[in-house]
Length: 111
Image 1 (spheres, rainbow, N blue to C red):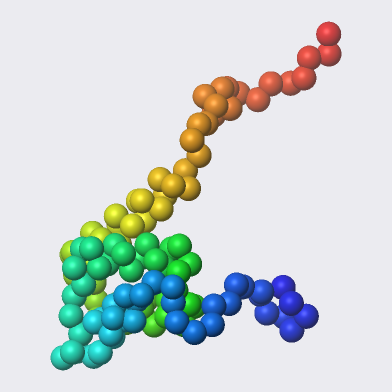
Image 2: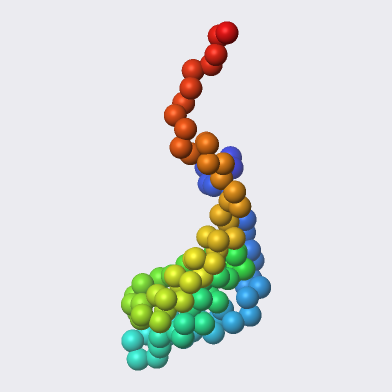
């Protein structure tokens, strides 16, 4: 936390690194008559970019609010879910010791 009381978050200035994100925001955020549902691939790629930090905080907020206002279509939810699954796989531990999960706590031996 900084001296001003705000949390210090990484700040991206300007446009995103993900080139298609502006088009995605435009597709979902142009109002009831102009917006459209994203395809599975568009939703997956947009969510993957968002999770990877490839978009600015302002773009992330605009996308999420626009999606919430528009409502999510089944293909969009499926694409977002796939991106979350892919991200979870890459963040999952590769190995978990079996004895650490299942064995009860033992008192130290004094012998």
